[in-house]
Length: 358
Image 1: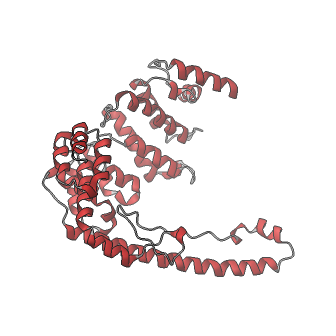
Image 2: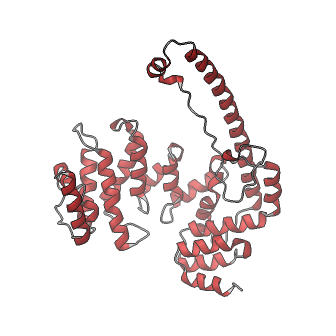
Image 3: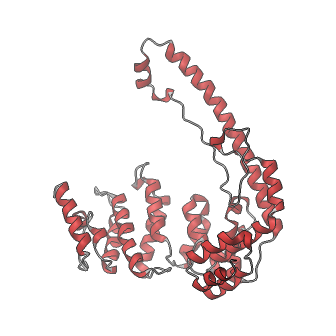
């Protein structure tokens, strides 16, 4: 088909929204024929499983295939399932779940199957496919043992859809690790799973805050050093270019003459940040003195908001979550309470919240 025919056929299928035959995809040639149209079909679990099987079977073969296109199609077609069923936990055959997990694992273990530009895309797509999927114990263990590989792996651990002894034990062993402090609410959610009366110690929040400050000060110093070095390099390069007989030839044959621009990466905090007005406003550099003053003055609110999100992230049933959330509601935590109730579809809690507004 030419581009216009594909466009027209896509429009027809989008309007008809047909239910596909179980054997819609049996080989890679079948996939190529329907790839552009797959998102417009109703969800058929057998078609999804066939596509997972196909992707898994040919992933490690040397034949010419578009691995990213296969993963993108799985993601798009999987969304049709999520729209129709709307379940938190995705019910798939054990073999299918394992194959998805092995695709995710393979992105880290054997990245040579992908080009350098494809690796991150593949990791993100496989990560999406694993959301709300319950794995086997040995697969849970692999995730816990490899959280340092990627934020995606850590997300699959902390946001696992059901209670897990493996993950609970991992959390207990890593609860006070500096590198995980920014995920305090999610870490605490696993301890709440085990003991619904668990509360985060305010001293832990203070240590978290101190670690964020130290990390940001270090990041700012490294950024300023990079900028200084970059400026020196640019000045030298500029002098060299200006002394050259042919400016454009120099830049074309030596693209490395254009220095990379440093990037300032600060901690993504979950509470208000006071900015240093004496610094470049585009960099959003914190005013640490003012921020410390505000933090200690409002630590009770920070505690309550963190507890609200920890309860929200937990795997407790909705009824118990609703009761626990009420304990940490106050005027200062209104927006967090509202967002959580809306996200979790806690209608009774929203009505309870409404009655308290005057």
